[in-house]
Length: 387
Length: 126
Image (tube, rainbow over all chains, first blue to last red):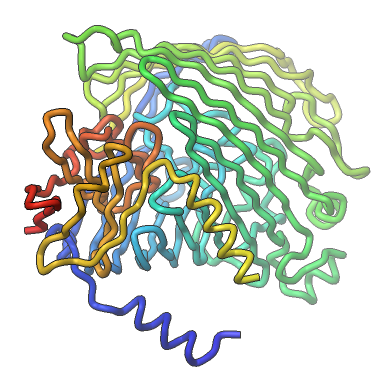
């Protein structure tokens, strides 16, 4: 219970006069990132080109204690009325309250700490033109919701921790073939009847960064009476979605590596299927491992350029287990092998070329018909930047 | 529960890769004892009522480098990782001299002037 004394101490701590560096005396920052690509689909014999993302950061420091952080995103370059495709969306918009050098709160639309790409998704920070399949369809990056978060470090690292409470997912919007991705509210008219808690622990040991994170949230956005009619458990954590994730990143000299594994559990998937007929899975999983080598690391004249040769293997299954009333779709059991080059003439500019070999299970005639090839190859050229 | 959390925090504090020295501000400066560098060449300096940490490093020539652990991209506090400092907001990284190694930050970490007086190192905050 928060006593009056506790409230007084907290207020005095937070609002106490603090000296601050000159650059924090009320300042506004503008930044952004973006990427575009050309891709050739070998099976379809079809090429596409797209400005995939253009994102503007706008931040303002009111003082050393309080700041505002935002990201505004345009996908696919254009949104035209009446036409499909394209998106304009707030990726983040939150207030940040610093308690001390080790701790701060966030409140608003923010990205909880789950996975690697969810927080660090700028195109110059990962290899390959596309974000990983695992962190697109199993962990639906960028996954942002409304809520409050608490972030801390112990003595400025190496141990970091975070916890957040945010609005939950909407299981009515789950779509076959995209996991829980379509269930995100992303700050728009979110149901706050159902909530979610997330947490993460990071530990840095030398050049190794490790993280474990978790998510537990209710997925019924309907009001209780409607939920009862549909046979769904509603309320704060009714019909839960549970996510677990762990990853390790290593970087030393020219060599870098990362490995990530994640699992999603929807224990009441049968009830979701009965209510919404969207073939929700009971379990999904995904994992990937990547190694990269900077071919320019030991060439003094080449610095600060980087030429990173990488190879990554991903394994994911968006219907690893299904409820009794689900339909298995082996095309969602996938392996992706991607290899390519990332050339960075500067830290914040990257030119990418990669080839991705995809292999999936066979099509289920009960779901779809027509020819289907279980393997395909994608060649992608692109660029990215951030500032 | 509070006692257990405090004990756990104390135990985890001993796992810090860089030692943290807590002190008070002295006007517009921070004074640190020279004896601090008897062990280790990099220390985190945390001054009461100063919003961000400062990394103080003893250079090979005997001088001292003081870096403000504030990301130069979007003004977020940095954490010590491996052989540098990292920002969790957008992934910027800096080496122990404050030079950007990973963007989107483009400017190096702010340096404060330092001087040695008697048995102390004085960091001038300007």
